[in-house]
Structures are given as structure tokens and as C-alpha cells.
Amino acid sequence: MVEPLLAVDGLAKQYGRHRVLEGVSLTLEAGETAALLGENGAGKSTLAKILAGAVRPDDGKIRRDGDEVSFASPREALTHGIAFIPQELVYVPNLTVAENIVLGRWPRRAGLTSQGWVRRQAAAEARKFGFRLPLDRQMTALSLAQQQMVEILKALARRSRVIVLDEPTAALNSEDSQQLLDIMTGLAADGVGVIYISHRLDEVFRACRTVHVLRNGRLVHSSAVSDTNPGEIIRHMLGRSTEETVVAKQQVDRSTKVLELRDWERSASPSLRQVSLDVHAGEIVGLYGVRGAGAETIAETLGGLHRDVQGHTTVAGRVLRGLRHPIASRRAGIAYVPADRKSQGLVLTLPVQQSLSLLVMRALSRSGVIDGRKERALARRLAGEVKLRARGLGQAVGELSGGNQQKVLVGSRLASKPHVLVLQEPTRGVDVGARLEIHRLLRRLADDGTGALLVTSDIEEAVILSDRLLILRDGAVVQEIHQPTLSSQAEALHAAGGLD
Image (cartoon, rainbow, N blue to C red; front, side, top):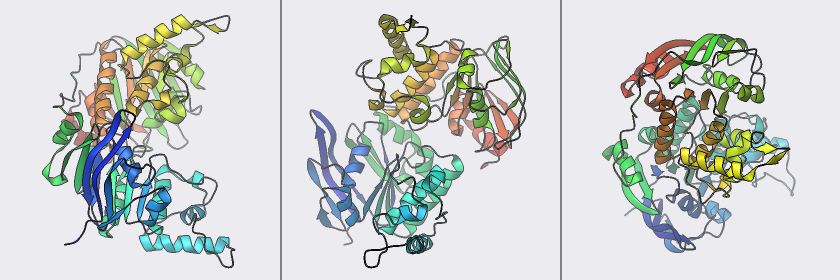
């Protein structure tokens, strides 16, 4: 009988009275790509950290090729061929790609090494595993997808046979995501076992052979991907039947425009060509296109991040002379929700209360002193409006789940009562339950009269939320779909130049 590449039996972990994992058992075969799914807090990260040697379990056993093992550190896990690649990548930014690949394994003679030896060893590893990477460039000059590939190659170069990937495509566009999925397929063909933690069910059904679902620290479902479907997986994740994900769209009164763009042009890349669009009060207008098509540029320009866009902009009937910085954008009545909440949207060390009031502190102040009662009242109102789940207003935002961080981000932008809400990737990196809640929040805001411009690389999200969906290709609007439905996805992908 052939032993599985990896087996865990009855793993358990408890912090205080909170049981994070309870009796989790699963196996991973050589050449198998297994998805590990669950809502935030289900126990996925704890299980991954136990396998990586970063956390010691309270109970249970781990076996590699049938032999029981235990790890006191990630280094010990690596010596047994288990590598963990977290969502927040760990690399030395000012070293080259080659230096990062051989990090800790420097080729040396008499205790000395050289740049030439380092590069030759890194090049040999890249050739062996079929990776094409700019070995002489610094890590900071690489795209996120390339940085992740360097980390995967580093793990393979250490002869890892089990690789745990935590949300590797959460911040990638569709092209980079597909490239990473292709790499996973190649790893499986070479006999490497991959545990793939993700919220993207479409990728799970494209790239994985088996699926395991955790809920409240327990393994509640395991099956072959071919024996299940997304609806069943979501039911296991949530512990209940999901409600219809396509929320009802109201008839929009098109008499009140909150945003008008006319003849927007940009010569730099990504370019814009004669882009014109309107957003009405109570309407969600979606923008969809492949990376570089212009959708992100439009959102960022409205957020005050690009000064080189030419054209005419009107907000709530007021003609603007330009949006040359984020403050000008906010003063014009535009609330911009950036794609990267951690680096662009939130101060993770701040408490919830200050995070929700951060952009309107001047209105809450008198003679430079913030009125604490007004700030608390505003924070309570916004927290209720976005249905925030937190221990209290004093909890640090960085301690919240990804979905609740995203709610704080949206709530902070609503504090100024904007004319138009510009959202870029509003559900990136959140679990299925939080995604549904954010969708319902945006629909409620629209029903209450808020106009919104939605930029998303998730085509299902685009058709679910949008009252009108504009498709961009090569910097221009090439198609408009009124009242899109789930059946509109193929049409939108075809128009965007993606898969039909």
C-alpha cells in the first residue's frame, strides 16, 4: 500500500477557550492539488501554519510518506519537504531574484561566494523547473505575480514536495492568476502536492482535484471537485443554504446625474480613448476589462491619483477643472475605495472609531480638538450601516477579518455623504459570506440613492451588482450591457477580449 504524501490525523488547536481546530483529518497524495476552503476564521490559516511549523498543535499527528513528524519551526518543516507561501510574501526586497532564490543556500567555496556562482545556481534551478524570471532584477521591481513565482521556485529549489499556497491569486488579475494556476498544474504533473487556500471558487473548479471545507474549526466536507458544485461548497462553508446571490435591482430614475465623464483621454499607459459615461443617483455602473484596458485608470483618476487625464468631469451638476490630488477628489464629492485596503485605504493600527472618522475629522473638530461624542456617534452609525462585526469601536482595524476591514473602508468613505462612490475591487480577498454582505450593502446604498461606479476584475461580481455594465478594451468603451444577469458573463468576456 502506497502511503499518502502528507496525512494529518485529528489535529486540534485551542487559544484560551476558543477552539480554532478540532479533530481535523485529511490526506494529500503526490501530484494532487487540494483546495482548502472556508470563511475567515474557519481555521484555514491555523492549519497551514501547523503544517509549516509556525504553530504547534495541541493534539493530532502529521505524517510524511507514512512517517510521523513534528515541527518546532518552519526550518524543520522545510527539512521534511513542506513549504508555506503566505499571502503576505516574505522576501528580501533589495536583493535580486537570483539572490532570493538561493537565500540561505549560498554556493560557496572556503566560506566565500560570488555573484556569478549565485546567478548560475539560480539559473540552473529556474531551468530545472521551467521558470522564466529576470534573475538580475531586484524583487521590488517585479510584479506581484512574479514575486510569488520566485517564492514558489525558492520552495522547489529546497526540494519541497508539499507546497501550501495561501490566497496566491487574491491580488492578481485574471491573466496573472491563470499563469499561476498553470504553474500549479505543472507542479502536480511533477508529483508535488499542493494545498491551495482560496476564496475564488472558479479557480478551485479549474485547477484543483479535491476540495476540503472547514467551518468553525472542523472539517465539514471533503470530496473530489468533479463530485460537487459551487452551490454545494458554499452551503458547506456557510452552514446553511445560500440566499440568491443576485440581489434585486431597482428601476433607476435617470433624471439625476451624479457623475458625467466626457471625452477622457490619456496617452500614457494604460491609455484612455474618448471615454464618456454617466452615473445616475441610485445606479451602480460597472466597468470591466482585462488588465490595462483602462477601468482601473478611470477609478484611480476619480480618486485623484492621475494628473495626466484630459477631458471634462461633472459631479452633481458641478463642472470640475481637474482632479489633481485625492483631497480635491473628496472635496468634489467623490468617495474613492481603493483596491488595496492595507496599503492605500486603512491605517491598520488605528481603532475602528478613528478609522471610520478619519476623513471627516475637520467636521468633528472645534479649534483643532475633536469632539469625542460626535466621533463616537458617527462611528456607531457607520458601523451599524455597514453591519460591522467587531469587539468594539476601540478594536484595531488590523485585528479584524478581511471582510470587516473592507466594511470599515467603505464606511469611512460614506462618512462625508458623497455624491458618488467609486469602488475598485470591493470584495478582493474576502470570504464568500463577507462578499455577499458587501454586495447587499452596496445594493442598499444604491436603493437609498447613492450613485456608484464599480471597477472589478470579477466578472460574476460585475454582472451581479451592475445596473449597467460598460466593457473596456484598449482604453475605450466597446460595449454597454443594460441590466446584466449571470448569463451576460460570456458576452462581457467576449467583448473584453477574454475567454468566450
